[in-house]
Image 1: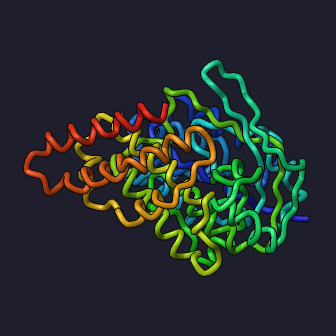
Image 2: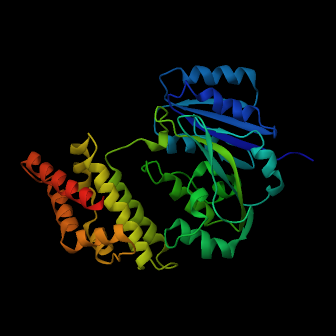
Image 3: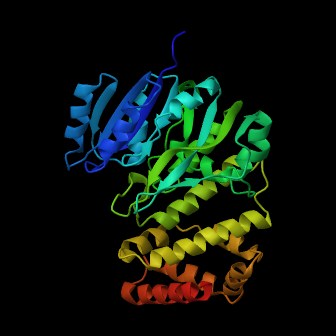
Length: 358
């Protein structure tokens, strides 16, 4: 019986120092019917030469070079070249255990196959990340609708959230991706994984959650993933993504709940604090000022209900209008003739919020 072909897509940007362990972890898989697609996203450090070297040694490897466009662009490019029945993504610098695909072979035929991961820290120890559900959880369409999608949409908290958040922890059917024209949103840099996974799993009739670690995420601070780079549009992009998500699912789910509003309020308050600590404040404030959806934030914050001590401190910030005053200052930034003055006010208000949240 012919083995199912898996297309393994690896987007690469300037990872010459650690790329070898990623490629070799795929080459050395016990399951051998693989199509290994290396997408060099405009590297300048010799990553492309290393890819070509491996391609000369293993006929399963296909190397493509493109202009730098980010991780979503590289993944989408890889999808156009993939011919396998399943697609698997691996970030350059990370690696997978040798029995990943062989262990999951018994589930081939299902629409989605999900697994867990290790985190490799600076001392190179692999720490297992397990969720609390049973070892194997097969699911159907009803489970997608009632449990998985609400979890991914942050409408409720449950044990399935962790592993489902990341593109690299799933095997996807290429036919579903093609039939529904699914691809990564190249305008997003922070929420691209979640948006793609939500769109994909919404089309799944079945799948399996395997509560076992196979993927190793390298969190060494010297190794920067394409998908983890900071960028100044982070707040406005988050607003846009959440607004689009609510609009798409508004007829299927209720977004006006305490749990959801609490979650979103925490997201934005933490993002505001993050922006205040970045060196690229000027650019960040310009984007925020131009794109911030004030009405969405006010709706979220006005419905914020405290559930714990930190939440109560956030609620007090909202009640005394510190958050609204911050939004007002952010909206003034682009039109202001004295940006330095407005910037200093924003930094001051963000610092006050940060202090209150400690």
